Image (cartoon, rainbow, N blue to C red; front, side, top):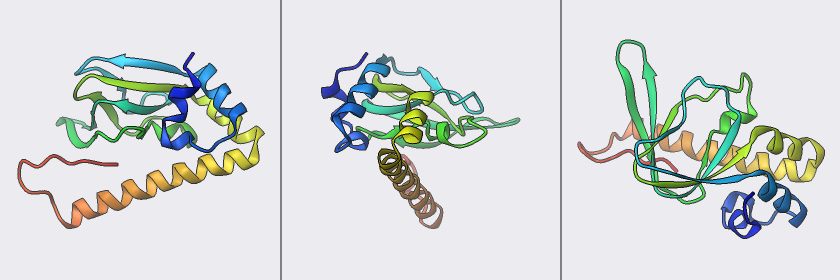
Amino acid sequence: MTAVEEVVQIPFFQGIPAEALREIAAQSTILTLEAGRTFISQHAAAEHVFFLISGSVHFYLHFHGVDDLLVGTMRQPGALLGWSVVRKPHRYTATVRCEAECRVLRLPRDVLISLVETQPRLGYLLLKRLAATLANRLEQTRDLLVRPPVSGEPTSLQ
């Protein structure tokens, strides 16, 4: 169980009804993960959505015969990780590994889906925020392809 005060600090959840915040807090867990720890594995069943509270993570894509390729870094507190929970076939699209010690909020997929399905206005707000997150990441990825970073400069997604 997580304190409501911690949940409301995550921008994704700001401004949502108190009852929903209490439900999210009751059903979520705050995890402290050491550097190097993988907590999302590419192609694994997407059972949880995560929100980065502190620390930084690396995103990796696995390519057969090449191993894992680093494709991005996230340091933004409140960042949503594991958005695949809302789209079939509910499999994570990348591996996420802690670059440094991290604190994350872990929320089960069924809790998020229940809120979306049983509270249409709240569901609309949450899915709108998720869509904005994905649109921002797509735009950043496009910008990286058009203007590659200077050699040695890390790729950072928001």
